[in-house]
Image (cartoon, rainbow, N blue to C red):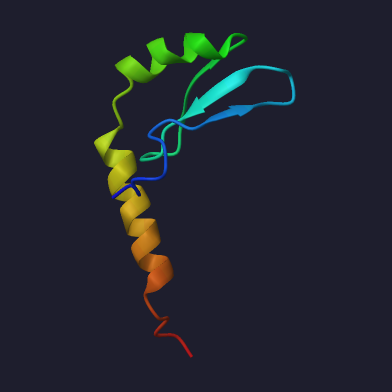
Length: 70
C-alpha cells in the first residue's frame, strides 16, 4: 500500500536531461520525455504487471523472513 504522502508517479531528471516518471507500485519507469508535462500521457495508460507485483511482494517477504540456515 502506498503512503498518502508518496505520489503515485514521482518524477526524476536523468543524466541526459529527460524527465522520467516512475510507478510507485511496480517501480518501473513508465515514460521519459524532454518536457515533464508530457509524462502525464504515459501515467494515464500505465497498468502494473500483476506478475511483477507478485514478484516484488515475494522478494520483500523473503527479505523479512529470518534465515533457517545456520
